[in-house]
Amino acid sequence: MADMENQLLAYHTKVATAAAEREEFAQHCTSLQQTVVVAQAETDSHRKKLLAVQMDLHQAKVWDFPYDAKCSVAEGKVETLTKAKVDAMGKLDAAKLTIGRWQASAESAKEKQHKLEVEVASLRNKRAADAKKLAQTVDQLTHHAATSMEKAVAQWTVDHATKVMSMQDQIDKAKRTAEDTTALLHRRNKALEAKLKQANDRVAILESQLRPLSHLTKRAKALEAVHSDNKRLQLELMAVHRQVGGKKAKSKPSHDYMDEQPSIVLSNNQFQHQHSPQTSEGVDTLQCELTRYAQVLLMSNRADEAGAFFEASMAQCPHHLDDAFVLRDHDECVNTLAHYAFFVEHHRHNWVQAKRVYERILANHPTHPHALGNYAMLVHKMNSATKAHETNNAVVHHAYNVAIREFPTHGSVLCKYAGLLVHENNVALAETYYTQAASTSPTSPDIPLEAERMYQTAHALAPSNTNATYNLAKVLLLHMESPSYNINRSATDTSQVEVV
Image (cartoon, rainbow, N blue to C red; front, side, top):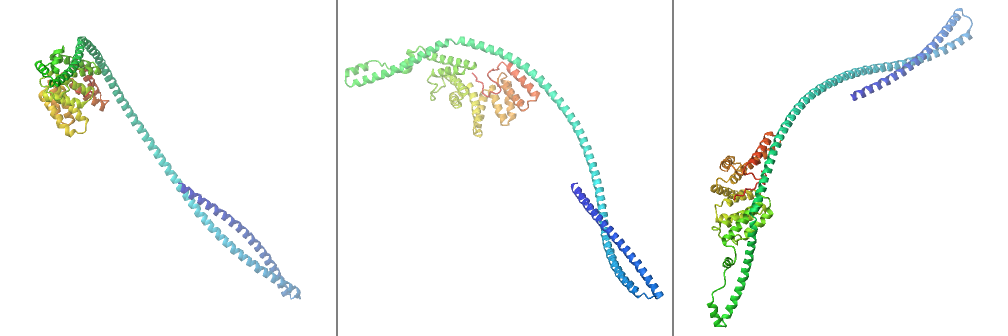
């Protein structure tokens, strides 16, 4: 469009230039015509004068008058007039030639102007046609845009209304779900408060029942004092014995006297048995009471205080820390070590020490119910925390299989092993163990925990799924109302339950 306007402007310039040249040619033509008119007038005047002279000459010749002088003058005038005529005719011819050239130039300019006018008219028509076509295109595009906009607005309105309705439905469902969940959680909180009150009452009762343990603690401290005195006396007696032995070489009577005296050196256990108010049975009873009280403190979330009682229970018997000692006939020591391993694993997070204690227990008691299941779950947990899955996987499976073979109703072990099988994509076998756990140990806390864990995973993946949220709330309520529910555990707790 801009090129056409520039071209049209150039043609207009050419037309204006041609018109100016044509006006200049017209002015030249007018001046030449005036010159020709003047020359023709002079020629006519000379012709008339020549005609008059010729007539006078003719009359003079006819009449034959003696006018020689006049004739000479007349002939001179005639020659002058003839020359003037010739000059005028030459000028007239030159003027005619010039007029012809200017007329030819004017005709050429007229033709050029006509061509330019034709081209300008063509360009104007073309421009008008293009403008008309452009206007039609603009109208079509405007109409198409308006139609598209109307369709888009209508579609957007429909989609927006649909989305608003869908969102409103989701909001209503979420509100109903939230109300149901709130009601369930309210009931759960009430039940939790009631259970917490019962637990506090039970703890108070247990504390009142275990107050006599303070007396046992004092007796244990007295026993430790006697034990230290026993060591000191034993060292003193050994020193006296060495002194007496040294004097035997000097004095035979003294030697005979010492030989005749009964030995007064006692072993550590004999001295402790004779001087301590506690017998072996009393020591076992004391360490059991200390272990039970430590468990009560753990249930009350008082792990720091429980640690002191576990350590005191471990210190009651020298066999606890002696890995070479055989514990097959010492059930109380085995139970104390099992509870201590559980405490070290879950509250001190020393998995290596706990694993070593479990392995020592199982080396002496391969079917110990407490150590067998917890050892399998500990190995599973340690294997999951390291990168050597392929290497230790066989150990984990073997530990679980042994535990399940010895105790097929151990719900926690069954659920944990089923979870491992699900992780390994062995869903069919995992379902078998889940079913076995639910049928043989319906009160196991790990069964509702596994359900809660699955629904929490589903809820995290799809928070807008009202079914998963509602089922999660139902599982939480059922889990809370379960007789084996523990307020200190949740689905996020992957630790095993201690089996006493």
